Length: 117
Image 1: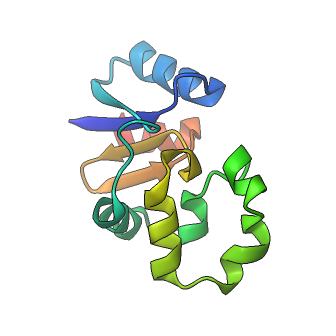
Image 2: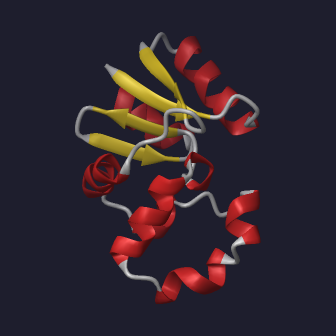
């Protein structure tokens, strides 16, 4: 089963969910604020994703900006970054799609089409 971590007020998440519905893709939805992945799960997703860990951060989010993470991340260890990501779902890039052995951060229609159709 495909799992999609979303935030209900996020327009990109709404667009992604509409795309899934329009293409008849079944999925389980999780609220990234209330049911965000813990550190172990994030590590697993990161390994499957094949993207740099920085791509897991919601760089346009309020918390990211308030904490000035653009300045701090380069000096943080991977362990520190995972702990930080696991501390608040609003720090995690959304939507986060988990489909078998594939994990995609953000919604890029072409990537989702390749992964799901």
